[in-house]
View 1 (tube, rainbow, N blue to C red):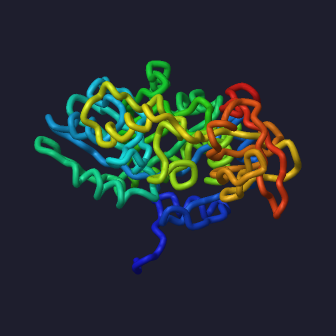
View 2 (cartoon, one colour):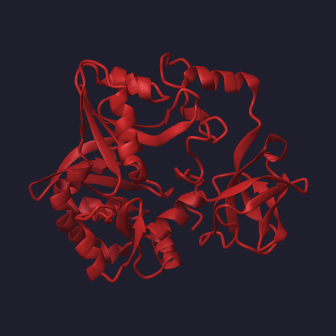
View 3 (cartoon, rainbow, N blue to C red):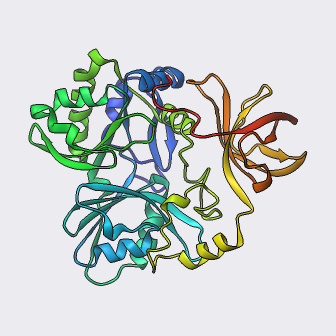
Length: 369
């Protein structure tokens, strides 16, 4: 592959055969939609959708120093993570800026896996490697790992039908994971997702992903399962106000103002960025990431100016017409004076200030569809 060429997951041929519209995303050629973003969005809310997220990065940390290594990098207390459990956390620089948001799995004993955003694989690898101490073997397994996300209210029924004996999926709690087998293939089944619905993320060898993909779609057809693209994944996560790195969070933002203070455990001494975040907390925030809905007509798009009190106050970080709610919704940073529920702001759309209102988030709660 030539320098700068887009990478492909092991499911590329399956996407093309299914008529997916392929687009560049985070250095990969990925399906943005199959039959349409709105239709796929409703499929996930009402039944189940299957996503290829094999572009995500996976790093393994193994050894007696693995917990201490990850504890220094993340804002949460990784050393308290039990085997078979998953933890969401932020990874910060010394000034508190967010390097990435990630999930950490304790697979067993001294074996952990960190799952990072696709656009940050190389950056995160270099950053984490620079902090590696003794007693830990650190390995990038992204290229050899396939990752499928089965999401929606029918997800458990579909997966149970595929796995031997039903897979005992009820034993896997939210943010829990366990190993299962399917036709001789080892799977890590994780009850996690990025949609706001119940569902599973299935880790396997990259070479096994195409067969697993086809088996899930065939077995789940009667339950309404359809393949879904990254377009629907984005509208689904926006309805939940789940942060997207590069849009809603980044190195110029910190977890406290981004509404991720719940993943910052100050009692976990020694993590990178702790002192800076303590200073920010003590000084007080000047802005906060909020969700808002449009009062006037217009859809807020990424980068559109936000006005507070008639003055420039920030920019939209994410926005869409919510397929579930039938409303235009958005996310963005606003001054603390305008961050409360019910506060009136405006978004500049096509050169005109359009009224909007800060609302309680998530915009969508499970069962509203």
